[in-house]
Image (tube, rainbow, N blue to C red; front, side, top):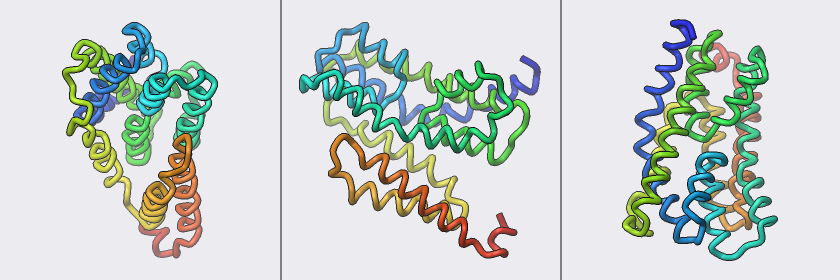
Length: 235
């Protein structure tokens, strides 16, 4: 790793640290919730180690507690995590030059929080070493998720089920979203996806997540096509 790559990696680590304030509480809650759902200790930690997807892990814990068949659990997780295909499509233009091993690593570490931080970096400063920024921010999040899950397992039932920590992650995502609202297309995409998520929240298998995301993307694309020459020049 040369000095430029090291600098990008450290920048990625620093960028992710403030976000951990909203992520770590959810790791704690997941560890406790999975144990109460009947998932053994080692399997609970393994979910964080190898799945590394907060929403998928919470859904797994809830469905296991309800005795849901494994096929339904896997299908539900697949639907909920289809949003990662959108993340990959957004970042792929910046990673085309990378070898497959790098693409595999970055894909593994690509979560909601890592995507937002990395996409801002790619937009503001894209260089031959920016993938090290993405690696640093993703690895920091992965490590924190392991530690917080383990702590949640250790604390067990000490964490209240209806804790105020439940607000931590939504507030974190709001803080991540606001800096990205830089023009009309992004505002339109955010507004449409937000209203759609509320209106469609009753859809089964968490389909509202995917549908709202797709509607937001479509609305943003339409707004992008309708930009005036003056707006294009100011971007």
